[in-house]
Image 1 (tube, one colour):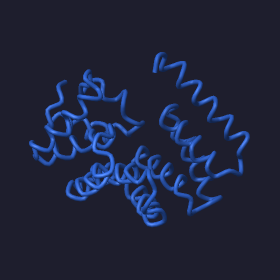
Image 2 (tube, one colour):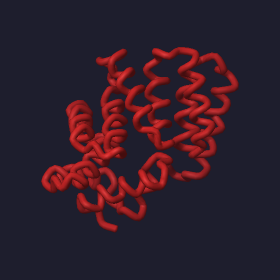
Image 3 (cartoon, one colour):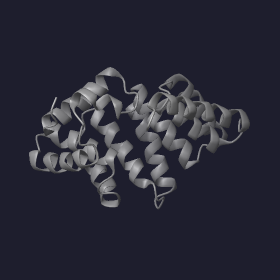
Length: 196
């Protein structure tokens, strides 16, 4: 973004406008909640919106996905896994399934199930081998697991997209994680070889 503060404020303004216009539209509520949570860092509002979307349509892929990521950011990875698994079951051929696998990988990573996290990230990378979120969590997973060859490969792909990335500025790329989850992410990338 050219002006991150201005553009983030505009994204949140437009998301709130979508909520005003689509109070009974589960897709609008889901995506507005995602934007308000990820860009605006207002997780309470994001949770309210994505939960309302799920109440309107409990089988909507978008609502399951966005509410799951909100759960990850809020520190509720087990709830996120239930929703992501349901999304995967309901729409196994969805073209954005790689993002569901990224969410599953993050949730498993944050509770320390590195083998499950690695399996999920590999499924995502099979569809999108250079997706920034996938290669970033892959590097953290492999770094934390001590699998240096895979960590180095994933980190090289991350650095190709973000050459200036360091542990110290990682928070600018991440969603609004709880402190302990952000620190765990940083630790995995540090072990993968990301410079401070």
